Image (tube, rainbow, N blue to C red):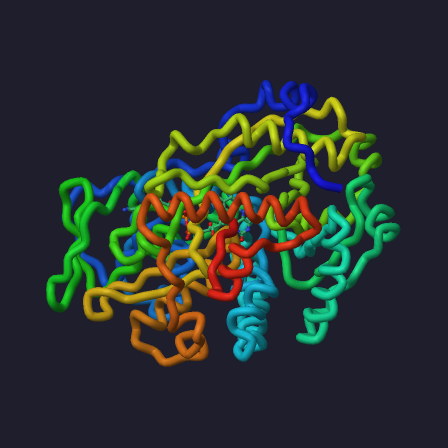
Length: 472
Ligand SMILES: Cc1cc2nc3c(=O)[nH]c(=O)nc-3n(C[C@H](O)[C@H](O)[C@H](O)COP(=O)(O)OP(=O)(O)OC[C@H]3O[C@@H](n4cnc5c(N)ncnc54)[C@H](O)[C@@H]3O)c2cc1C
């Protein structure tokens, strides 16, 4: 079934009372703010950005050398960026999914799969060892076909993934609907091994707590506005103070980068999310979903959805909104049209939940790049390393990104730094107005493909041939 475009009055009523705020951050467990920078300081390593990438990098740097003096700087609050706003899918995939990895790096895919799976295992071990209370569950994920052409695509993907030893399972319509009761389901691909679910804000706060216990200094409400190369050190400006350091990491994701070259390779794309109120036992019975997996549908424009530990459903995705000129800021974090569309699609998927309300609605920026996976680089003679471009699948990959950043900064030759994925960078986006026009035409074409049996038009086929695209 394809999703209708018009918001129904039922959907409008369901979102009418929703708070325009991030459910995960709206939690009494949110820690008090760390101090902001109020003097000049010096450090061995300074990390800019208090999301998953910055937090993991700080912790991993401490693992490598517990004597290293590490400072983490965050513009607002820890987890205020994508880290506190996401769906909480922790995927082993480092390549924005199997298909993207296979099409770009077929030769190194076995290594990428192994590194990604190990990364997921290491995240789980870290959470357990440090007693981080973040509802981390190896729940798995089911990719659902909701249009006829997607059924065969899923079948082919199962074959291809199993050829790489990934042990995924094809579910036909009966098996899919027996497990989760939706009239829109036509088939599914169950991956039980390589996806976990987490409360992302509680994970980030747990990482913060662990970092502080290890002596890592954290400053919040401190924005780095300038970065200079001072021969053997770098100097960063913030709050009219200077931080000098031997090495610096930039983990600023979709935010305007301090490295101009990154700005051409990343576009901020806004993605929106709804959270329901808790479902009653009878409502849960009406949809089944006893294994409480993460779910996503398999169109180009896809929804992702998952249960929470207090019995709600998070429902997000579909629209991926780019604003001309890399538009970025709080003014783009709410979009009532997207919320209405999401709510409509929710009730088309689960009509038996009619009457359920949404308690929260929010949006966040995804750092989309033209190859959909993170890319790395160095500046200032190797004293500064950066990563960006996760394109909506960075919760798990951020830890791998941190390890790679440290390899690069420390000049180590490792399995990670030898990867073509790490050594290469995505094609930049063209300047405006071509950038806006190209993205608009691509999203229109993707929507058309979803509603016309998956057929990709000339433009999409051209982009495919060039290894370019637009995704969230
Ligand atoms: C709505 C949404 C849903 C998503 N769902 C998923 C999902 O289910 N699974 C998944 O794997 N991925 C998902 N993602 C993507 C994922 O959240 C990100 O890839 C990941 O959190 C990136 O972490 P990060 O630390 O690199 O970036 P961020 O969390 O954005 O952190 C960057 C930080 O840098 C700070 N900063 C920026 N500039 C400066 C400066 N000059 N000085 C100081 N600080 C600065 C920012 O304030 C911010 O806190 C989703 C993203 C969104 C927006």
